Amino acid sequence: MDQRSDSSPATDALVARFRTTLPDKLRELALAWERWLAAPDSILAKEALQLLVHRLAGSAPAYGFSDLGRHAFRVDERLGEWDAEIAPLRIPLDALCHELGGSVEMLLRALGRAARDGGGESRVARAARTGDERGAPLYVVLVEDDPQQAEQWRESLSAQGLRVRAVLDPQAMLAEMVLERPDILVIDFWLAGITGTEVSRSLLDTPEFASVPRICLTVDNGPLPRQVAMDAGFAAVLRKTVSPVDLADVLRQVVAASHRR
Image (cartoon, rainbow, N blue to C red; front, side, top):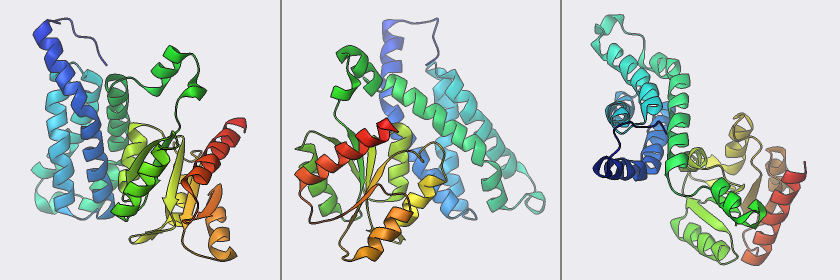
């Protein structure tokens, strides 16, 4: 976070209030960007992203987050330029989406940094305070499109001493990963409209997250689903009948193995 020279109790309170909203702003922006990427010719998706970016470009500098404001302003300015152009002279909307990819990713990273620095005690800070990062609970992001199953897994794994965030789709997973890199992912094989193997392969193509270990849960029998999942980069494939105790043990073993590599 950038330093402010006009600090006062009232100003500090406003900055602190703004700081607490950053994780939610990150999730909203990441989801809006994923939706535009999924439908790059959608004017509604573009406008939804633009509204969030415009608000951030105006508010971030006012609260002392000037670096974040600069990144937001660049994206907001380009979107505004496109709006102001005569329609026949505009580049296609999907081309604009592609053009802004790098700038939006930089904005998301800047927002992620601001959220981590100001969003409460980070895992690094806890490690420094306790003197042993290994003592911190593993942070697990679980992707399961059935809300009831997602909540059941979250509760049962939390009872095993893990810190679990359950999400319903890959877009929400990416938003969580930008906010805080998980120790490991648990992904259902069959998700709505996509398979866990497709999600895993997409992560292999994302340098920032390619090394995050992941476990696949499936209801399928036989060697074929397992082989397909392993080929997609999963460290292990487990039936959904696995007990929470055994699953937690596997998660710890996979994370420990990834640290030794």
